[in-house]
Length: 287
Image (cartoon, rainbow, N blue to C red):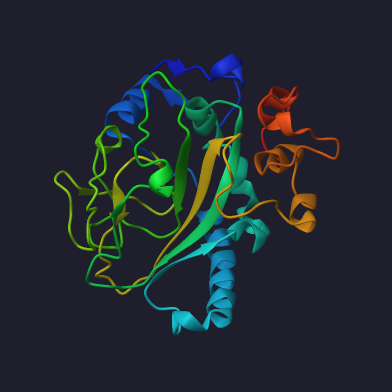
């Protein structure tokens, strides 16, 4: 059995069941290849519940967005957490949150939530890129540092074969400067791979990893949900503050993960909150 990689300040208890921590092998893969594929973190019943909720969100979004022309193609629905409470459990899911804390540490927040919809398309659905635009494009991860940002993408439909709208990346590219001329859709960098995943798997990758979306040559729509995490002093990606009615349904930890510091908050709380370890790493693993 691999020895578990300890979260800073021993955030969580090793005896907690069903909590995935970061093994030494995963730590090595994270630093060398720049991504982790976590297998079967969602149960079939969870996938079914999420797909029902996501399909409802998609239907409403398409109806409210005439420019989508019937909802075909590839598109992203931002602020997804505000559209359905079915995603709340993914915030600190017992099969992923331990790994997230082991990678990023306890002083973190959720910077954005998205639903990805990828309809059948014989050509590449998204060109290779890095996340967060030019502000982070020349900042690279360091093996001794905590990451600034990363995303975890939960796959709700199977991508067990190539050309199913797969997540694509170049392993190890997070250590290298992204080309100034970038890449056009369908132009793959040397070393690019299609990640094969089952429904219920999740992939974690940092902002600097070169990634894109391959063609979907099936008759099925690829659906996934992504949570973007960052150090808690980072600016949120697709929201300023969550609506009060959304925060009201959440546990204390989940509210904190979305930047809610309480009524008597001080600006410096985003840098050195006194109760952060108790809130994030307390005995109650999920609400």
